[in-house]
Length: 394
Image 1 (cartoon, rainbow, N blue to C red):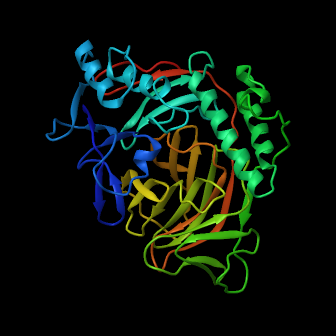
Image 2 (cartoon, rainbow, N blue to C red):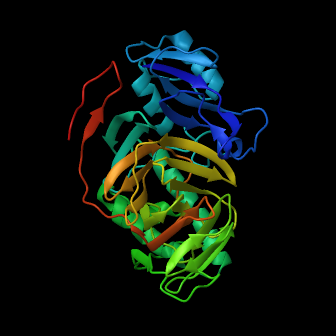
């Protein structure tokens, strides 16, 4: 495998937005939040892209799986990405160093940090490529995680207070449940300039049957906000009625940013969104699945689309369960409980709303469900990059 820093490309094919350069088989987004929210124009920031063979035209060739990073090469990488000095001597360690130690908890200057899942693991996937490294979260070794959690709390508190809700205190309780085993208490998640408000109990699952008379208003079990396009209830199912993209948010927030959304797939191109916030600004992770077998995980930052991973291997049958899961910095698409795609992306954290997606005038889905993820903690260390390294742990 050959590894490069390159620019994202603005395309206007099936969807208008940012995509990896042609033929990349693995990727990581190393752009800041403002860079990701630019709609076209000169590409800003970089991606890390994997290719099966050397290619021409990308910004900088890093090396292959056995490359030793010289000081000159590390300086070239640092200058392009705007980081301080880099310590790593191989590409695997470089990626982990960039995401865990050189990130920006606010996302305003650089990419946001790698976050652990509910099992306490920081996992690094190259979208469409492989799991390349996994290690157990340690507050001392991964200090940017707590800083990112504080930033999330500040933003969520402001969002929920704006709508008269104390739900941010329920989110605080989830932080205690996930990070208490690492010696962190609820007070640790609250920035020093904010009042110390105690956690509240939380619930974990929301459901929607769409069992109601045909209507332009979704329901009846949940309240919904249609953010773009149009969804109707037709024959006790949700149907997207316009060409182009449709999206509806379930207005019942979950308590954790580590959550899933799923539905029964019935026809055409439909899917889910996760990590949406309470505003009308379209920032979330999403997926959609075509009858023809095309599937995709994508994100939108302030309404600007970036494709994270695509595939064309599914043969869909009405009644299949499509599930999108956000767990730490790992975003997974599953069909009938079997993983189809996975990718690491650090751009969106903290948000607790979910919803449904349609990209066709005949997309049909049913039986929506979303919930917080829960799992027992385990400790492990694992790494692999093609051409380098040995797996460890389990």
